[in-house]
Image (cartoon, rainbow, N blue to C red; front, side, top):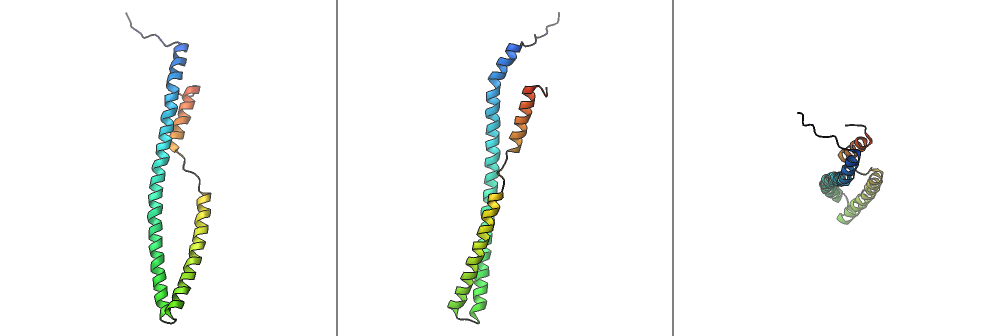
Length: 128
C-alpha cells in the first residue's frame, strides 16, 4: 500500500500564499534596508577619512606656501594671499562636490531587488 500524501487543493495553496506572502515581503524589505544601511555606513566612513586627509594636505600646502612667501613679502601679506587662494580653491571644490553629489544615483539594494523579482516570477508561475 503506497502512502502518497495528497496534493494540496487550490484553496489550500491560496491560503498558504496569503499567509506567507506578507512575511516574504517584510523579509525582502528588511534585506533591502540592511543592504542600504551597510553600503551607506561604509561609504560615509570612507568619505569622512578621505575628507580629513584632504583637509590636512590643504593645511600643509597653505603652510608651505605661506612660509615661501614670507621670505619675499611681509608675513601678513603672505598669510593674506595664501588665505585668499585657499578660500577660492575651497569654494571651487565645494561647488564641484555639491554637483557630483547631486548627480549620484541613490544606492540600490541589488540583492533585495533580485529576490523580489524571483518571488514575483514564482508567484506568477514563472519558476517552480
